[in-house]
Length: 402
Image (cartoon, rainbow, N blue to C red):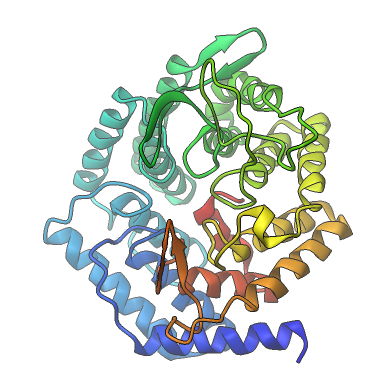
């Protein structure tokens, strides 16, 4: 059986499982909440012309509204309201659902604004769990609404965040950076996070998304290149390490270990952010840097050396696959297509758990756990397979890959 057939078969298995299996999920956000599952059902239903999955997706959307109306009030993109509302906007943008333009109330938006301001006060510009995630929801609304009053509302919200990002940027020569709290297990320090999931690369992607609009480009243009300079200036010059960038930078500490090969942390996320910046700024030097970073990662094929244990999007093999595919789609460099194929084949072979969902489990620190969420589970794996097989790539915005 060739790779495409293997992927199609596994996709059907995942779809059947998600259609008929219920795991109660108390959260509603895009990455670890119910709305991420809705994305899978709508995209798969469209791909296979299967109304059962469309209906399942609609049921999830109704449940999202019900929970918000009953007082659900967790704000983040990963788990909460910002992510759920972002998913609604993406599905509407893609023509998969119809919603009134003002169905998301000003009360919800003002609640998120208050939470975003609290995150800003705490220097929390985290994409998954902080201010950037709420900003991405506001940006999606700004892109989609047509009523001038609504457009101005989201413009105002975005300027609040953009001006805070600018005000809190730490300047040094031709670089800028942002400091945050670095927590990993028992480790806790102040420093600069270089992970796409939580750090400076996600700020660069957000600024680059804003920067295509003249309304915001006057501020973003002054920030994007210096932020990229900071990241690139911290490239590791150590021939004994296979990675190019550390997970984070702490004052007076020397990084002596590889970062993993993954979406969440490491060189792949850095490459994504530099690529996005190059496209907004139309900067060929940055484009070449992003390609150079990614080309070096193609030498990391050993699953143990790369730190890969599972197949999920966050820190697993399918997350690696979709980044290589994205770079191939953007550059037409055949090496990246070959690497996408390599990791797709490796990913499908990780479905080895007899008690896992469609054979897959997520590895978390020391435990293996079945998971149907987008970020680490089978709904995300299903979306990655759909992407590989040619279904619309628009959903990858949920991982700020595009």
